[in-house]
Length: 337
Image (cartoon, rainbow, N blue to C red; front, side):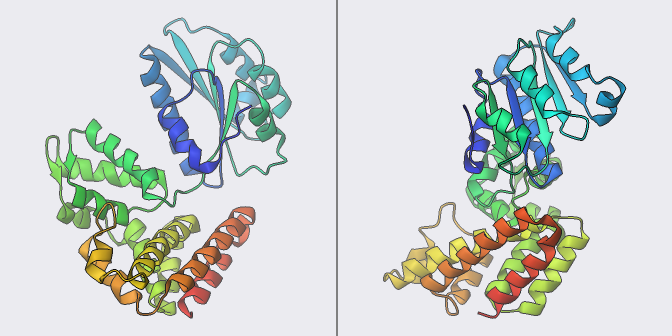
């Protein structure tokens, strides 16, 4: 039985277990689920170092032939050593059919992409209770460690270098959504060119106000008590087509840093000495903002803010129809602290 927590999923995707032949990836953001499925597919192909045929199925395919998934999983490829079948969990995909297939004799690897599944979901339970399957919850990351490997792999694939300072600046600009982060890294790699090096100036030039820069501005406005600015940034973020999870992830990252800085200073560290303990180093603009915010916040108040952010994040995932209203309420409460 393999039931993974959200924090463990990135390591599984980077180094998939050979004993696992069926994987369910689920979460509220379809783009992020699809990105994780693509990354897992690439890593399985790289791990096995063999010609691989990739089959993609959706509701249209299953409506035309209800047995299509079973056929693809049980048929050996004529032109490749192995095959991977990716299918979207929509109306035509029956959990009982999937359960019979993943416990039976199949020659292919199955990757299922699904929406936000409750613990009582039949499909989720099937993958969590099978010895040969894994269920991976997929949510927007709130930790730079989730994005650092993505940055390295994207730049290495394009023959591009990046310094430690520039990497730290890029991490501070990227949202927790991996699909968007990968897209931004791809643009930077193209901008720098093969054999080039990404600089802080390149990052500021390529990554505009929309996306990660906007979430950073939202987090800073909230911490500084600028309620109207924070709500304006949230409106622009939603209008650009992004999920509120990006805003919540940025808030969590920002208040984690603020809590740590307040704790170090309250323990007796001079401001510069406290800042030097951040790894990777913080960009000078963020350093100045955090130091100014330490006059408004303390270790205890930042800790309470983090609890509020965690509660709001959980509520938005449970009731996605109210995610904008819940996030607005959180911003108002934090900024009026």
